[in-house]
Image 1 (cartoon, chains in turn brown, cyan):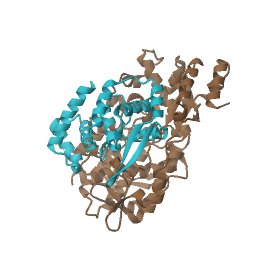
Image 2 (cartoon, chains in turn red, brown):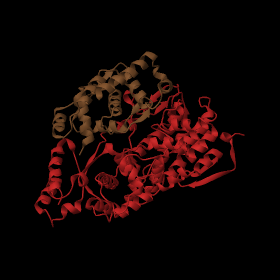
Image 3 (cartoon, one colour):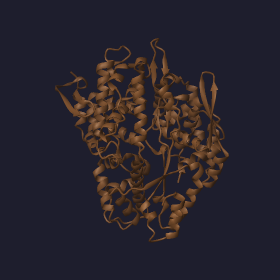
Image 4 (cartoon, chains in turn orange, red):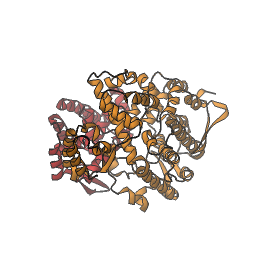
Length: 433
Length: 168
């Protein structure tokens, strides 16, 4: 028996609140879970700052990665295995890619990516292909195996069916995170009949499609995605905490560029500030480290850094007003000037946040070959795009779905102990009392 | 404030009408790869580099009334045409965007190319870390369906060189 087909003597199981059990029988998978790069995912929350809005949202990328692996395991072992359109030799690469697909995520990765121009997918590839425990496990399968796993995750693998399983508009990644995020946030949206969807998945030449009889289960999935987007992922309070977190990082970076002397050397951030971060530096970061620095920076002498860190740590977040850029962009220019006059640096204290700033998306029917849509397989074998068959999906696919909010520190704006008249004018423009 | 929206408006203004979402996606990706300051995040998709962030930002600019999006029915498919409105021009004028003459040259040039060709150019730029032989092999692998000829690949390589010159 080769390493790639080696099974554990006894099946291992992880108890899981979403899938009940995660089953591991393959030695390769068990070894990957044990690597330090994979264990690091325990220290990175799946939903970043969402725990400040939904206190249950403390689940990690480790939980989610195991969940995605479990869904793929069920698909390839139970649904696809007997089908001639599926190449069973792709089983292991599919399982490994599912398990490792989020390996390069860092702490609060959306904000870090914005400020330091990181790309978590590039880090995923670097971990898989670099001098790491994960690479050593994968290389035992075959010298070229790490590259294959990396290609699946980067969506550049030759077999598009495998890519489609892990990354498409109805993939194992979304099926896990929608249910998991719903469970841990405690909202009643996000639930759909995954068992039914798995049963009607069919491998086709270049993608995985859905038997038309499963359309209603897919409708439910699309609705869940839509509702989770507005109720959880795009929650205005979460966006406020994300705005402050991003501004903390911006401020620390700016201070470093100005040769500011931090009371304590920000050792873990130095290479990031300089723009020459190595994989080793990156892997040392986790959320505990970041929050440790935030706590230390609360006492920094720079008033902006200190204030923003206190706001984040103590959940004294920015408030918001709805903002319509088409009518109010001139108002924004005026507000920027007033903030400056009131001693509030608008770069840090007046922020427009738009729906396009978020890493989540809606279902798109794939017009003009932008993204491959969800295809239903009709009884004749013909493929039809989902929104052309489903009125429900069609109704929510064409709706306006953009949104902008203007965030500001209400406590400062309401405090009339300084710049009283200017602040009154700011309040007037913002429409607050 | 709204700097990324303003940069895109600059790109639309410089390009003139852009016909096709795929073309738009590839134009901005190629400009980004040439080091112009676009921050939309791209990932590789079935049809080459694609940015959901860009799609949504363009949708926002349309909803704001700064861009027009016209649906044109072609034989068997739908195509979108984008143009800047007077409101969009006024918004752009109100922003303190730095002029980027080399970006303008580059975008005007890209806009004259077909979306099929831009898909090839963008794909080749996506794998720009590979040696030429491996790059060609990769293009054939990931773009098997598009059946690009060796001539087209040579043209794309020359075009990338041409773009580097006009964008510097």
